[in-house]
Length: 105
Image (tube, rainbow, N blue to C red; front, top):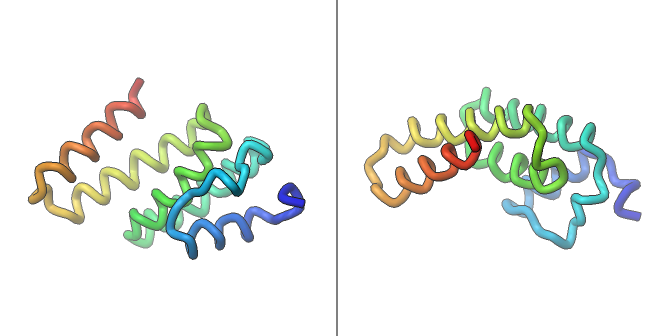
């Protein structure tokens, strides 16, 4: 049943729910599906909506943790979020920096 849902449906669920949930079982997706979700997330980055992009990209990375496009989009979303927040909050700044470092590993 879950395999039959389209990528658009998964993206809608992730956007509406605002989080990724293990019950969606993204492990059932192919890496192509994860890449298509990453492309949708890239659209959110281009629209200057990094939080929406991060919600989607976390779901895609769960399905395909080694996907270069997913990692690239997450990096861009984190950098945009850091820029938008202005680095005023130390904890937020450190959290973003840690996420960026883990992407480089």
